Amino acid sequence: MNGYLTKAQLHAFERGVEAYRDGKMRQDNPYPPEADYFGLWDEGYQKEQNGSSHHADVG
Image 1 (tube, rainbow, N blue to C red):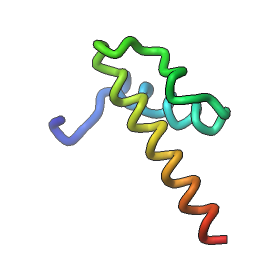
Image 2 (cartoon, rainbow, N blue to C red):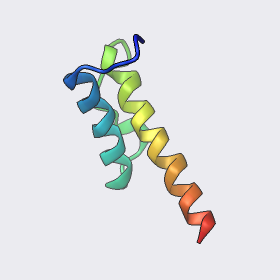
Image 3 (cartoon, helix red, strand yellow):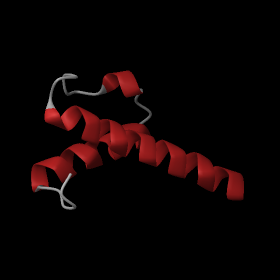
Image 4 (cartoon, helix red, strand yellow):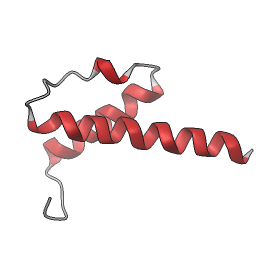
């Protein structure tokens, strides 16, 4: 990537974050695997998953 995200790309990433927060599974990714936004959604999901589990360990 070239260091910045378009609004649509950012939206896909944020949807992944929200999906994790809403208790959805990674398999619930609404984008087909061949879509550009599939990976961004997954990145958001994983980032939130890793960040959430990290914060849980700190407390």
